[in-house]
Image (tube, rainbow, N blue to C red):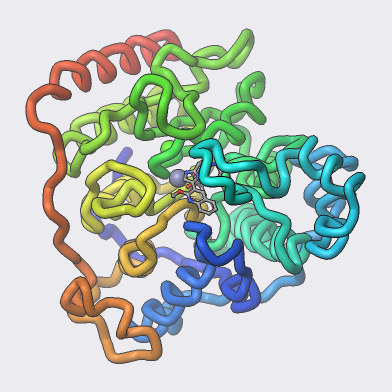
Length: 396
Ligand code: TV7
Ligand code: CA
Ligand code: ZN
C-alpha cells in the first residue's frame, strides 16, 4: 500500500497571507505569527514557490466558522475590540466567559497576562487563518491537488464555545468537516504538536468517520492542556477512533519514531482513511521555548514524509512552535518534503537570514540532547502496547 520514498511528484498548493504575520499577541506572548512570514521567506528563497500553486482566497465567513463554533461565540469574536475590552466591564465579563482576555498571573507576579488576549483585528485574523485551511481542504476535495499546505493554521485547542491555548477558532475542525462533505468518507487526523490536540479530539469524539491521533508531551497532570492520557479512547459508536500517545519530556527522534511509525502503519491498516490531515506543530522540536520534546527537523519531517508515502490527499497545517527560527526551518523543510525536492542545508541569503545566525545559517540546526536516559524506555513500551491494544479493537 505504501509507495516507495519520493515515488512520483505530487501536485501541491500553498496558502500564505502576509496580513496574518503582522498579528501581535502582545509584547511578552510566546505566539509569534511573524514566524509564518519567516517560513514564507525561506520557502521563497529556496525557490519552492515556483513548484507549487499559491491559493489566493477570500477570508472565511462567519457561516463557514459555524461548522465548528456557536453563533454566540462567533458574534463575540467579531465584535470584540481592545478598546471595548479595556473600557467596558460587561464586555470583559462576557469575554472571560469564553476564556478571552487577561487573568491575574497564577505565579503571583501581579501582572495581567493572557493565553488568549483580546488583540487588534482579532476577527480578521481568525477569518484569514481559518479561510486558508478551508480553501486547502476544498482544493483537496476538488481533486486538483494531492497536498495542500497552510502553515498559519493548526489551531487545535479552540472549542465550540471558547478560546484556549492561543487558539480562537478551530480551523482544523472546519477543514475536516469540509473534507467530509467534500467527497471523503473517512478522514484521519494526526497531531504532532507537543500539546494534546484536545479541541479536535472533542469535536469528533462521537464521529466514526473521523479518527484522531495525537502524540504529545504528557507528564501526569502538569503540561497543558493536561488531557490526552493513553486510556482516553473516545465514546460509544466512535470508540477507539480517538488515540492518544503520551510522551515523556525529552523524547527525541529515535524514541518518537519507535512509536510513530508502527502506530501509524496500524492506524492506516485498520481505519483506511480517504484523506489525512496532519497538524505539524513545531513545538515538538528540540530547543522549543515552551515544550520539552527533542525532535530534530529531520525527525519532525519524517512524520510528514511517512504520511506522504501513502497515496492519499494530505492537508498539512501549522500549529505551535515557539523558537521561531527553528519553526521556519522545519516548515520550510516540510514544504520541500511535500514537493519532493531536496534542498541544501545552507540557508540562502534573504530578508530574514539574520534570524538563523544562532544555528550557523544551517536548516538542520543542532541542539544539545536533553533526553533523560533509560528511565522512559519501559514506559514508552507500555504506551505502545496500550495503543496497539486499542487498535486491535478496531480491526475486523
Ligand atoms: C497550539 N504555556 C498552543 C499551546 C498553548 C499553551 C501556556 C504559556 C505562556 C503564555 C503567555 C506567556 C507563556 C512562557 C505557556 C495554565 C496557564 C498558564 C496565563 C498566561 N508565556 C499550541 C498554553 C499554556 C502569555 N497555558 O498547542 C502571555 O509561557 O499552561 C497554560 C495555562 C494559565 C494561564 N497562564 C499561563 O502550541 C498553537 N501558556 C507570556 C505572555
Ligand atoms: Ca499533539
Ligand atoms: Zn503546542
